[in-house]
Amino acid sequence: MIITSRQNPKVKAALQLRKRKTRDELRLMLIEGYEEFTMAVKSGAAIQQVFYCPELMLEPIQVALLDKVSAAEHIEVSRDIFEKLAYRESPDGWLAVASELASSLGGIRLPVDKAALVIVCESVEKPGNIGAILRTADAVGADAVIAADPTTDWSNPNIIRASKGAVFSVPVASATTDELLAWLRDNKIAILAATPDTDKQYTDVDLQKAVAIAVGTEKYGLTDRWFAAAEYKIRIPMKGKIDSLNVATSAAIIAYEVIRQRG
Image 1 (tube, rainbow, N blue to C red):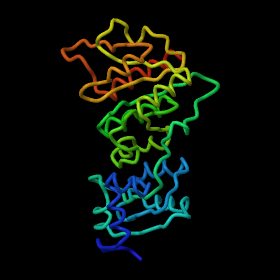
Image 2 (image 1 turned 180 degrees about the vertical axis):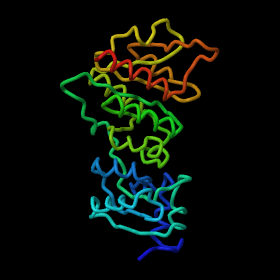
Image 3 (image 1 turned 45 degrees about the vertical axis):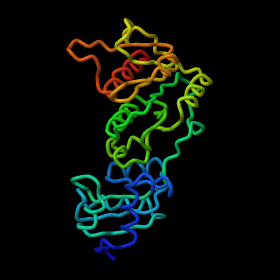
């Protein structure tokens, strides 16, 4: 049966998951998009429901993905209903409800055969920037992206969309600054803090040891707590008239320097 009513209880319940309060209470998340859904399935995410609309799918063969989540409830909806459920402008016919991501520091498994690479986001506000950082983390093989004193949740639909599903391929966690600084010390991970107020360029530091690239809010950057705890204060050369880069861009530049040095 194809659902065509906006008053359907399952449709209404899914719409409520756009609200963080509801996600937190139910410990659920929304995953929209074929690519993002595929990444979630590959990662072993606990999929509970799949809303799908064959009319919107880019390729009819995509419907075969339903076979990989046979334990989930499959809910076919009309185009009108799916467009009501979707939070992107050009939906592709896939929306899943899944259990929220595990996000405790205790769940992070650091490598024993190589130096760890972690990216720390202190109170980064914009889901688009967090998503871009996750894509960089996936690309460079980072061991974790950790939110310090977060202002949003990892289950935010816009983070999932902006990350292109990388939120499922990179371990994530949330913690207070105190908890995270203690965790980094215990694991002997050096903190890198980018700032224009230093002469040491990011290429001048030995990044072959375990490191955490720390980035702060879009407007103010890192707080004094993180600068005080940083083993290295580094800068990215700026040849123009502005003195800072987008937070996700800064993280990407430094992360690629890490893997360049590590060969």
